[in-house]
Structure formats: C-alpha cells, structure tokens
Length: 451
Image 1: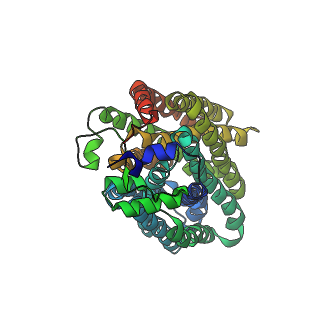
Image 2 (image 1 turned 90 degrees about the vertical axis):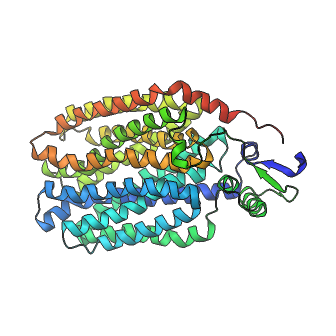
C-alpha cells in the first residue's frame, strides 16, 4: 500500500488544529462529566435533611453515603474493559441513561436500605461515565494541548458538584430533599438524546478492533472536517505490547509500576476529597450553621477545584505532569492543615475550603487527564477505569469513615489535620514513577514514521 493512500491517525490529529466537531465533542464530554459531578456529590448536600427527616444517626446513614462509591468502583472497572471490547460510545450512552434513571428512583426511597441499593445502582452508571469520557476525548485531541483540554473537560465535575450545592441550598428549604434528586435526574436524562445523535466512536478504537476501513474514514472525516476520500487505509502508531487481553497489558513490563502508582495516588486523593465533601455540610450544621449556609460553603470546594483544574492542566502542558500534580497535592496538604487549625468559626472558612478544593481537586483532575497517556489504545479505557475503580476504594473509605470518626468524638481540627497525610502520600507515590512516565511522554510526542 502506497503512502499516498495510508493515513496514520495519531499524526493526523496531532498535525492539525481543533475542528468544530472536536470542540463539540469536548463540550459533550464536559456535559457528561458535569452531570456525573452533580449526581456524585448530591447526597452530601441532602444528607442532613434526610437524616433529620428519617430521624436516624449519622453512622446509620453511612451505608447510604458509601453505597454510590462502591457502585462507582465496580462500574468503572467493568465499563473500562467493556469499552475496550465494545466501544466508547455504547458504554457512555448506557452509563448516562442508567445514572439518570436510578437518581430519579432514589427520590422515592423509603428507608436507608432502599436508598443504599439505589445509590449503588446509580454508582454503576456514574463509574462507567468518567473513564470513557476521558478515553474518548484523549483519542481525539492533539498531544500538545491534551492535558489542558482534558483538565478543562474535568472542570465539568467541579461545576456540576458546585451547581448542585447551590441548587440544593435553593430547593431544600422550600421543596425538600426529594426535589434535589429530581433535578439531579432531569439533567442526564435530558442530555441523553443529544448524545445519542452527536457522540462519535473513537477512530483509534476502530483501528485496533479492525473495523472496516470505510467506517473509520467516515468517522474520522466527520470529526476532523477534512476530506479523506484519497485515503483507503488507516493505521495507528503505538508502542507494541505482547499481551492480548486489555487487563493483562496493565501488568506487562513498565506498565506494571505505572499502574500501581496511579492506583495509590488516586486512592489517597479521593479519600481526602470524599471525606471533605460528604461530611463537611453535616459538621457545619452540627456547629450551628443553617443548611443553606453549609451547602454554599461546601460548594466553594468545587468552585476552587474548577480553577485548580484549569491551572494544573496548563502547568502540566508547560512544566510536566508529574511535577505539577505532585506539587498541587503537597499544597493541598498545607491547606487541609490550615482548614483544621482555623476551625468552623473562622471568617476565612469559605476561602480556605476553596483553597483545599483548588489544590486537591486540581491535582485529582490533573491525574485524570494524565492517565490515558500511560496506556496504549487497546487497554487505554481499561487502564483508566481500573485506576478509577481501585482508587475509588478511597472514596468509599472517605464517605463512610467520616460518620465513624464523628461518632468516636473526633473534632474538626483532628479530622482535617489527619487528611494532610494521604495528600502527601499521593504526591510521593506519583513522583516515584516520574522518570519512566517522562520517557513515555517523549515517545508520544515523536512524529510518526511515514507509511
């Protein structure tokens, strides 16, 4: 086959600017992550109202708070492997539809057991959404701006989490906690028809899965806006791996160390984030704050995280991913100590909460943007999803242990000072594999050989 009719997809995407359809895809992925963020964070804002309505203890409600993270972990693990076999588009569509439906059903739960089951099922869909939006977008954007664009996409999570906080503050006093869940369900269900019409399949995935060349060309031409009628063969230059099964790739050669360090880092980051966002509203209410005030202050965590994600993404493209993400985790540890020392009565409470969100969510978003480049196409969704799935045991622990620590009499200062430890461990774990990751990035940025 002559070079004139062969097109290497990675070089083609890297050598062009972003087309209108690529920007549309970025916006669609942003909206998916936004709805994901809303429905992940929603229980933290309605928990105080439900606890009061059902007259149960905070420890008893821990089963509900921990159910969705368990579902997220399971959903992420299975959806990633499914995506590497069946496609990014199909799994994404199913995930958005499912978490919208189960969030709606959660509003009709009558007791903690029913609500925990429904939140687990909601979590399955939520867990499937994140790794597949990450993978799909990473396979359609140029390497030179990938970290920033993925980080910008992930700000949707922070925007959604913050938005549902402000919406909860508005709806809760008048319409009750069920109305917040109705709103959280309406957004993904309204988004689903748009995704059904406009979401493309990954051209890189289709090459790896040996889809007909005509279909690959049609999808790539549509997303790039380029005339590809002169090309009859589409290829993908990537590092060769011996393993055939996606999950086996994660533990082959240099990928094994990358996999373990990503898991540890993600676990530590989510432990901090979920304990903070899940239990901070309850701790503030116990200190005498109104529900709407508690929701608004907690929402500052997500607003800070939005700004942090953008700046960390820019820093990753300019100064390197490992250095930028690790520094953000360390600064997050400092902010957590400041939050604990300052206390709930501090006039700077909202600003310090925003600073914690800026650093911790910024670092976590950066890690999400960085992970896809650590794996080849045949195992990319699996690698990202297993990082999210295994790492989400940190969110399970964080969501559940807050009630236990409060029940044991831990104070606000002690809890947040202790959270500085996993933040530092996250930075240390990621830095451990830094050199091999830089080598991987250099390989990614090399021009492809002509075919």
